[in-house]
Amino acid sequence: MNNKNLTILAIITLIGIIVAAVLTQQQETPRTVSLHPVVFPKLMATINEVDEVTINTAQENFTLLREQDQWGLKEKYQYPVALDKVRKVLLGMAELTLLEEKTANPELYPKLEVEDTLTKEAKSTLLTLKAKGQTVATLIIGRDQTAKIDPTRREIYIRKPDEQQSWSAFGLLPVEKKLTDWLDKEIVNVDGQRVRQVNINHPEGEQLTFSKKQPKDSDYTLADMPEQATLSSPQVLKQVANVLSFLNLEDVVPAKEIEFTENLVTKAIFTTFDGLEVTVVVLNKEGKHYAQFSTRFVPEAVVKPQTEEPNEGDKTTTKSEEKSEADKTKDVEQEASILNAKFNSWVFVLPDYKVGLLAKKRDELIKIETPKQGETSPELGHATTTSNGTPLEVPTVLNHPTIHQ
Image (spheres, rainbow, N blue to C red):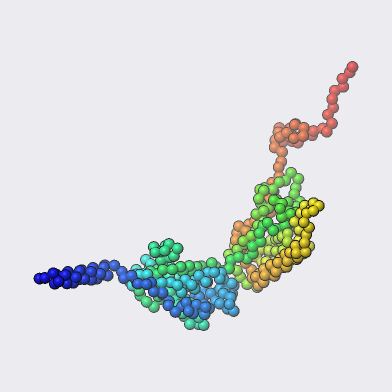
């Protein structure tokens, strides 16, 4: 056999070895999908037409609806939902790509959490997107983990409801399983630094008022403080003044469903240095704290920050700066209008810790110092009580013996 024939034979043998190796590898390992095809190829083109998102789990079933460009939660009377969460779900579904085939055996679905959601033990989530009543994408979503190829993304186990084959997919698809987690949680956010005065009326009749004169003042003063009384904590009034800071709801119901009986409610009025007044009425009922809000702009409540008298030659206030004050007034008026539009028709369920601050009574806010047994008077250096606790009467004039010459 000449050299040419030997070369051809060697090439044929090498090709045979490579083919055999590839076939063996395909039999021993799962088939990896090339180029990571998109799970829903047509979804991105129609994503803006989606007007309904349905989420089904073994525990809850609920629907997000888009009406007049506003997304709301159907089961919560179309109360607004967090738009960022909706956007992430829609884009997540449109961008999701397949990685690798997984099991097609229904008995193994629970391991990946891609079983049907109809069973009580199911941990899966069925996500369905619709446009004008027509389903455009539906998917069973299971367990996920950090993606090996990109730690900023997730490797998600998925299965289409009408298919037996499950897959691992690549992308980001954060789907909240709890209905209330979809709600737009923020009720109001008034920084405690803005709050000038707080008035609280408790259902038993007790009234509390505390305030500070200027925004730069560090502490609030509680009105009608008893003698020898001090605040139980330097921060306690600041904590109450901060109740409206990042105040989030736990749930929401239509206003018509809750009746606020005047002698059963706690009423708090927060007034800011720039004239915003927020009134909160809280009713405790069946273990929940229901709250109704209203707000308005009060011009006479505006307190301008104290400024030092200008020295001769210092820059004086310009017309543009005076106009800035007018702009500030418009801003607060607009803030009050926006908040009232949000508050109207709704009653919010508040978290315990926020309501707990509003519920504090005077005796929880202060402590009264009483002289201890045998304690000395700071003025005279004598004991102010006897051994049995009876107060000593200390004469204001001391009688000295007369010295005869």
